[in-house]
Length: 358
Image (tube, rainbow, N blue to C red; front, side, top):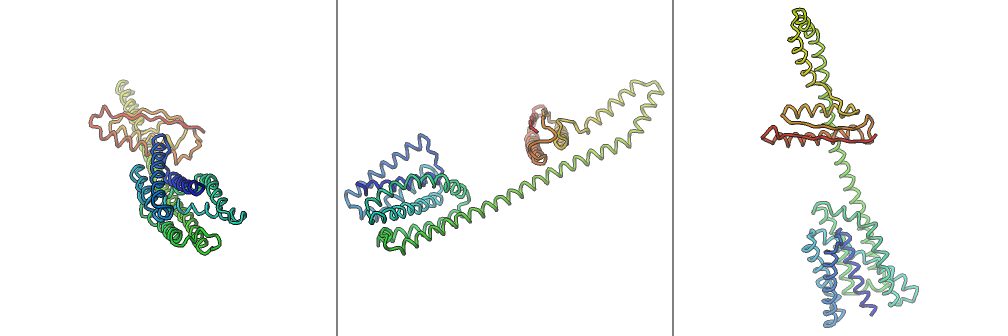
């Protein structure tokens, strides 16, 4: 009886590990499907055990249990084959702690096999908790990488799987606590794998962070160039206005001398409109954001795009000005590009609403 309970507990243990590592969401539908699969698999295995015995079932285990599980996860949950194979091999490796914990406890009781079986069953819960809390997040992130990287990672656990299973079936050395050679080999291989997994993951993370930083710097540079161009345009416009100011005043003075008030007023209105088209409008208290908004809103107006803006961002914001400018430039550029593709100018509209806290 204990043998049967332990046998099916390790099956449930391995299946749950695969569910954890493949990040399968246990909603009502998936829970029902997994439960049905477990029930059918248990019935099938029990039938094989009743007909051909435990020795046959143990030798056929990869074909009776692992292969159907591989097909099930790939077909129903639409998981990649390399990811499922990786999770399957990982689940097989993670049965090792159960075995060694039970062997150590059994030694205290003169290698009592009933105690060993009970210890294996009892070890399932804490081991599943540790795997779910500490190993699962790393594996999920790793499995998000490309297929080539995952296939490279599968090699080590697959070697472990082949060696461990062949020695288990053919010699039973893994189950004899007095013979430690195979135990040391498999545990050592598992330890190397875990170390390799951590190192590999850290390297991938560092590369991703470096690439991400480079992308951010590129966007920041683009935003800085846009900001610099806006400042340059504002400076050039100010120089032009200062240069033309005397001519404007002289012409207005001539109108007034001739008592031509109407023409003087028209000329003043024209100058004001020209200045309004180049002025940096104060949309909020943040100077950098005002420059960005002025530049892009003027760009939108040249494309006959109506822009409605409400910006409430303080002079000092919790987010760095450059980061905010990156978000704004990307958002407005995308909106302008989308509006340009609209054939009817009257339908080109952009509403900008920005709120921030200091």
